[in-house]
Length: 459
View 1 (tube, rainbow, N blue to C red):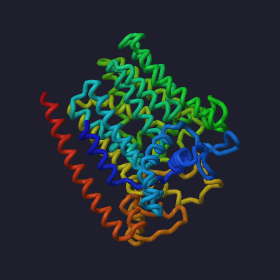
View 2 (cartoon, rainbow, N blue to C red; view 1 turned 120 degrees about the vertical axis):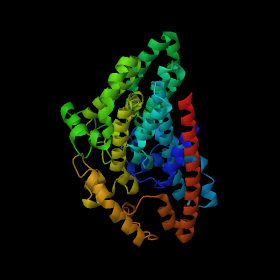
View 3 (spheres, rainbow, N blue to C red; view 1 turned 90 degrees about the vertical axis):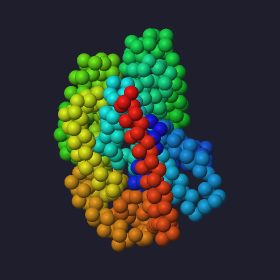
View 4 (cartoon, rainbow, N blue to C red; view 1 turned 180 degrees about the vertical axis):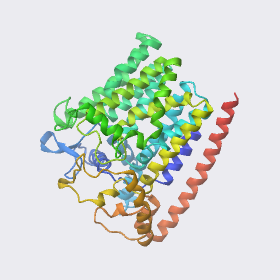
């Protein structure tokens, strides 16, 4: 597990964008900066925020990602004294790169859940890596959204519940709740499974971390909006007709789960195997997926705004990927799953090379900068077309710095190129040297991971 984490972390760091490109990530960073520097929770104008206490602007969503950003922002405070001219550039890069740690931990968590379901080490390794590299989750290591952190907490909660470890399961739920308050709906599901597997008294140990997360969530809401039950979405809600929302998530090419994660087509067969082998697991994973899909389909904007694939489904899709682990033990099933993971990688790889927002250059910005759910969402074909365009622009403007607010969209989104634009040729040389170190560590970790997998397969 350690080498799997290190290998996936190095791979993601190698291709990270070195910043916070999306408005949500910038908003969470601003919350962290405001909290550490000014001991306030509000942000200024121009962020993804709504009015709250005192007429000030506050970020939407829960405090999970602002807390993660605040920890890194606080830890990197010496940079403000060492290199004041570039400290903000470096600190935003480090905050953005922290998502690679979340995704790497998610890979390990999916591996553990697949093993808990009875998959051999090799099968668990395939689905854990494929769950990220072979689906639309891949580009989210370069974004700063709350869904991957929520998914991590949920996968941990399910695996620990199946292992009859209530306190650890409750801790996973707590992480999910502070990431996305909607995760509260999963609490009864996990508690029912814990009661069945370990009894009522033991299951109550899960209540401590969950209770703390709920209290902190209500306190955060109270501080922002004066109401513990106000989560920051006063004009948004679950108003979409279910069938229309389901159509968007399953059939519309710009958001279809089957387009962005083609391996999801195999999940029903994996669930049938769980019905025969482990019904507690089927209850936990199936109910999680059903709740996530139902909530997303009913949300006023199932598209989740301008983002790559059906982002809001990530917390439900990741546990379902682990369910494929036992199913691919059969050679024919394994080959089919690997093929679909490869297709999924091909779909999302262009969104790693260039920003998922690059297609916004194709159409005029909407009034107020808010993209409605039916306007020009990123599509797979157009994203692939723009990769060579961005590559050519990058080569011809390698050291160019233009502050028009959208110029970064025109480049290949790798941190090495950003360092070159800020620090010139010396920065590019240092970035290439650091990249070689990441490659060496990643290759070594991958080899150790493969060796460990072979040893586990023989025992």
